[in-house]
Amino acid sequence: MQEGGGADPCGHGGKFEVEVKMKTAINDLIRQQLEKYHCVKGRLRYQPPSVLSLNGIRADEKPVLIWLSGPQLGFQLSQYVGKEPTWGGLTIDIDLEEGRFEYHPLFVNDMKREAAQQQREREEEQRQELQTTRQTLERRTQPYGTELAEQVAIRLKESSIGYGHRDYCGMGLELSNDTYRYGELWDGIMNEPDLYWDNKKSFVDWLARQSDASLSRLESKDPFYWGNQVINEERLREFVQ
Image (tube, rainbow, N blue to C red; front, side, top):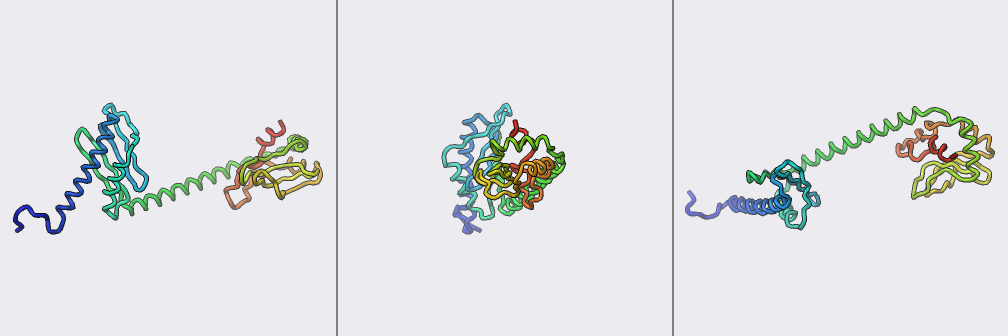
């Protein structure tokens, strides 16, 4: 039997006292922030090194996003979370009216599983979006026709179709040295055409048979090119106007 008021030889009493002091310091800082914005409840989330948010709720149930100033709260939280190697963060539910601060650790392994699941969901969402884009483009099979193609050929004598910005600029049409050219633009320049025609008739015959589907670059294995700044009917009609 241990006599007197000596410290626990295993150090449990000292560890408990340290944790109480750390929580008290954190709770006081949170209370100050909530009271500053007239909130009676709140929820804090902390994930080192940079995620620290505090959402408050006023007595009238109005939510408030609290702007945290100063380094003290972040420092205290980093010290508290850092003492547990299996923790990757922390949430705290606060009720000032009841004087309640409920601490919920975020475990590293759980966070990794959650992040992996979120990544899988994002990839599936992107895959679905790409599939929808492809199906939409595949349905646009109406040929442009000779009338529009003729107008484009005439307009190309004065200007060209193509975006001008850094890196990949999509597909363009131009008339250079009496040669009609269709190809990729990089930094606004068509270095080597994918297709070219030495006379207007050949170019018009080709363009008249094309459609948004045929010029959407769906033949590319890289979905980045599908419908990305491609030649389409809308751009052609804007061009000739």
